Image 1 (cartoon, rainbow, N blue to C red):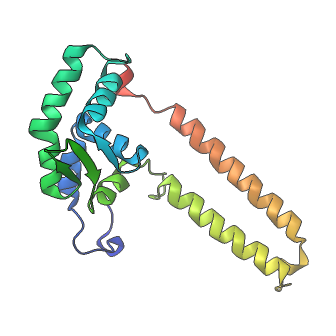
Image 2: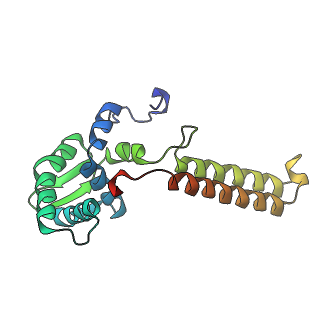
Image 3: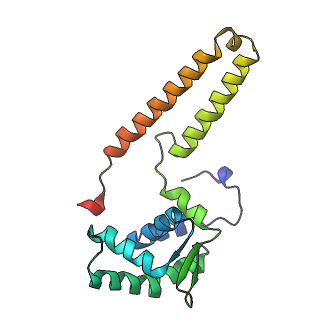
Length: 179
C-alpha cells in the first residue's frame, strides 16, 4: 500500500478499485496494450492482441478473438470507461486512455524491495548522479577533490549494476500466463 502522503491528486482511484481493475487479466492486458500503443487503439486490434497474448498464437483462433472482443465490448471496456481509466467510443469502436489510467499503471510496475518502482529508482539515481557530477565540476568541498570523470564512471557502473539486478530479479518472476 502507498502511504496517504504520496497521493498527489485527491481524485486518484482508491487502491481497492485499482486492485479490482487489475484482478482481471484482460483488463490488465488492455491497459498495458494501450500504454504501448500511444494511448489509443481500436477495439478489434485490442481484442486480437489480447487473444494472441492468451493463446500464444498470432493470430489467435477466431473463436478466441471473438470471445475476447465480446467480453471487452460488453464488460471490461464499459467498466474501465465508468471508472475514468479509458474513454470507450462504442460508435467508432475506439479506446483511449483517460485521467485514471496513470493511477492504474502505477500499480502495474514492478516494485523494488524498498517500495520504489524501478522507474523511480532509475530517476533517483539519475538526479543524484547529475548533482554529484555538477558538484564535482564546481569544485564543491570533498566531491570536487575527485575527478568528475571518475564520478561519471561510478554512476554508469551504478546504472549497469541496477540494470543487472533488475534483469536478474525479473527473470526469476514466473509468468502465470505462459504455464
